[in-house]
Amino acid sequence: MTTDILTLSQLLSPSFPVGAFAYSHGLETAIDSGQLATAQQVNDWLHSLLTHGSAHADAVLLNAAFYSDDPSIDATARAFAASAERLMETDLQGAAFCDTVQAVWGFDLGRLCYPVAVGRTAALLDLDAELTTAMYLQAFVGNLTAAAMRLVPLGQVQGQFIQTQLKPLCAETAVQLKGATLDDLHSSAWMSDIAAQQHETLYSRVFRS
Image (cartoon, rainbow, N blue to C red; front, side, top):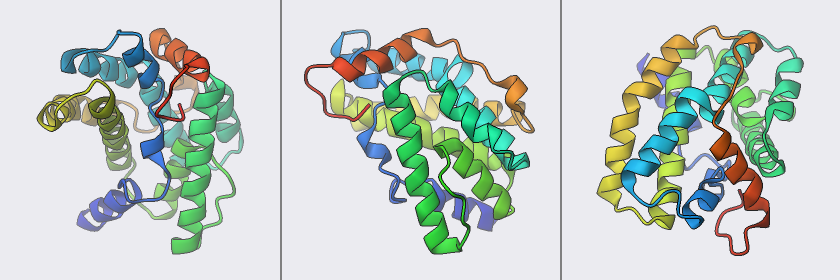
């Protein structure tokens, strides 16, 4: 298990070259419009993504890909993206992830969306599905918290409070979705999806999504 944790820490580290720092997942639009102006509002937004939105959907896709290499899983992930930028985000990060995994571990994954690529890699490396999901969600929260720290702005301590508050939810979601299939896929965090769509026409942008 210790080796699994170290491997996942590497795969999901900010140093793993997927370019996650360049994407805000629509958060930039929500902050620009004044919807998110405090640490609590950012926390609530991310909580919604974990329970009802794209983070929850990513966890489902990751688990589906962990237990099956059916190509329809990746096709569904692409179809499920709520906007052009969301699709770009998952596609480009996934492609970079696949390229690096092939270079380091020798697995030819092709070109997969990010959560699908993580799920398939975890299966090939014989990692624990629940642990992989929990650490993927923690990395998701960490990346968006870092974006909020730059845009709101939030202090570094506030950013750590957000991640600490959401850590139990990441773990709970991983337990709930272990063994999930495409039948479990859903999302109803509409404000986040709309923010991601509106980001495409945002006048001044720091992030790619």
